[in-house]
Length: 201
Image (cartoon, rainbow, N blue to C red; front, side, top):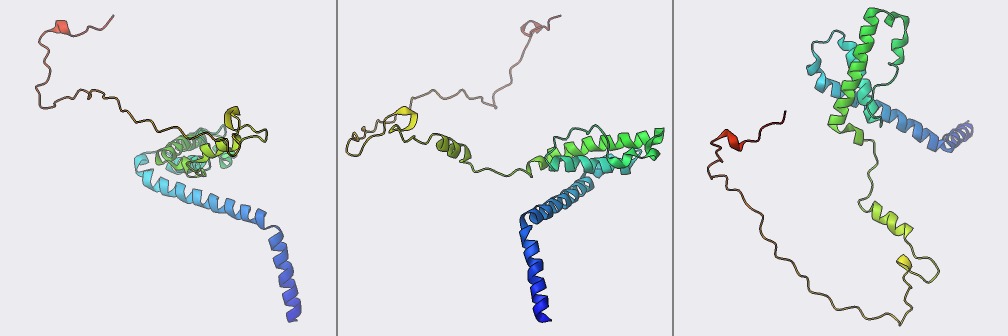
């Protein structure tokens, strides 16, 4: 019996390990989705005091969180063409329903703006190394096997390297100091209207 259990356990582990990468991606997507929903809720809790006098606060809040999540997920924060799918139902096909849908759209715009103000749009970007641009340039500028170095300059052979030039002295030009303003001086007074420029009509 123990042998059957261990064989079945190994079989299950083998099945799980074969799809490990796709399973990891699925778990990562779920984790990101939950994190974005939590951050959107936290943002709504911080900003909701600004929106106390709304006609349909529930729908505005749903739109706010959807707009905040859109920016978190890499969106640009522009309103979608269609509202959330729950607003496609027949109960929203009335004057009152349209008001609720419009509140959702308004909330979406405000949530996206709040996310942009919080800097949340940059949270999903993978930061690059500060030397990434130079590394890419160096990789693209590697010398070819033609005996030529960077920029077509011939590669020197051993023993034919000329001596390094003597270091030149560093000369710093003497520039005049920028003018300073003494804040303790009396302010400039204008005594006549003739000194002021008149607007053109």
